[in-house]
Image 1 (cartoon, one colour):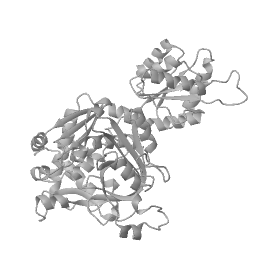
Image 2 (cartoon, rainbow, N blue to C red; image 1 turned 90 degrees about the vertical axis):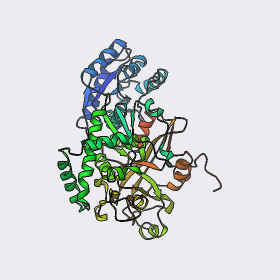
Image 3 (cartoon, one colour; image 1 turned 180 degrees about the vertical axis):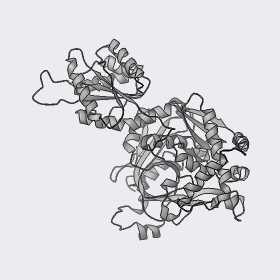
Image 4 (spheres, rainbow, N blue to C red; image 1 turned 135 degrees about the vertical axis):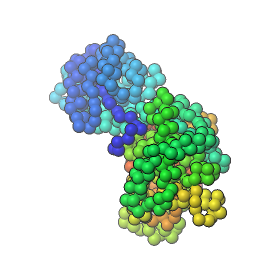
Length: 502
């Protein structure tokens, strides 16, 4: 995990609960075994108060709060008291996971039987009765080692929940004409605790000009030159002061405008007026902030920025935002993918993910010679295809081969949240194109494209985490109350709207 200041550190606490008609020492002994099994996997505070009643609940919650815990594991060491155990989550200001102890041995099923398997049923009923969101693993009953694994899997989910609750999205400019797909109702984000500050491009331009003679510019230029120099990518060194000035502008704005929140992401309008007025394309700066855990979404894509932030919290690594952009030509498929021993994909399983140049340099393939270049499309539109000036500033190169999770949180026109998750990989195949771009492969992508992305009106932008984190994302979206969580159905499993005769 990268050391990002823009995502929270999770400090977990574990509270054991015990039904008063069971021996309390059974729950305490099992709690201690879980803490021992988890040792070395993270920060876990063991609450000494075992909860049998509501007064115990208040004492235990106060104990973990004083210990600085911001996420909780409620452990049913035996059947557990259904009211106090669910009130723990009600009184604790942070995400909670509920897990239960498995029975240890057939030699001790009299006084040593805890019945937590049964207790989880009543627990889940009472959580729903009180409308309390909670994480319950797929199989929430286990030995100490099993529960330790569940706790480790809970940490990235908890990090995302805490992060979203303390997140502010800062935007500059209205969402672009003809990119209405990025223009989704934002009420759904307020519903999950995200704050949004919308600003004009003029506000950003004024602030940028105020940084003109900032004494910190030179040190940022030197850092940029060092980063780009490692891949021989500093093609326009004279552009670096402009971009350094912009980087400082964004970072200073974030610090000055956090307000009551702790973490910030940006969603900026990057064209068509931006390059001419600022004198460069913002892509490279966006990539640098993304590499530090501060995503900057293109085209004022608010949900894209939030999705990137979720991916950063879940994976603990830098992510990117890409267009689900173009199909892979058959000649590239036939020559570089079909029949290769390491690949088992149909042509329709593949596509190219692209953006102008916002993907962090650490995610680009060195043999593609990543470098600062110019935005070809904007150059044609704004500079008549002549020698580039202010359309320079993209970071271009093929995205390196990697496992990936392609996903997005989005609002429908009526404001309801929906999401999709698809795991796959970036192939080690040259794109022969421009921008920050890669050849992606997702099993049954063609059907997923038609019956999820098109059928449910998703925009062209998707967030990319560079690992398989679908399990954690699915758990998070369930916790957030997202009713529609779509994924790529395997072959033979039909989508509801899929033509059975196709």
